[in-house]
Length: 111
Image 1: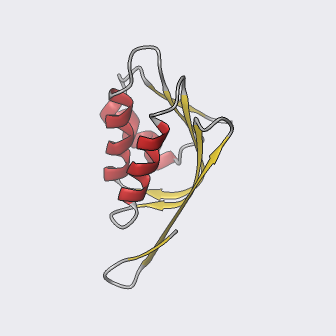
Image 2 (image 1 turned 180 degrees about the horizontal axis):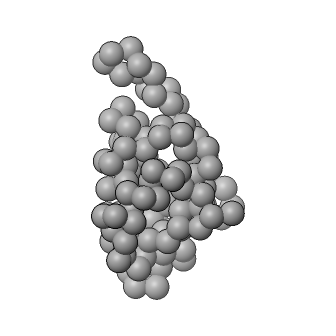
């Protein structure tokens, strides 16, 4: 999906579902132009059972609004369910550790 910004800067976010539907692979950027697509994909993921996984190796950029979407969606999970971020970009990892480090439902994996 290609989204065109007001200043003719292109933002690209590709979201693919894998496995049983409880895993997403993200490629591209999460910013003001693609944040709604990102939120909708996460919301769809929340309808699945068990732990939820986001593969973020292909994510080249995520802004603080995107990080907040991850944190708020993780907060909404019932106890025992986790939102697992696989290979988050270093900037996202640092931001989440600073702002939401004590959140038990949000986990980061590095493979």
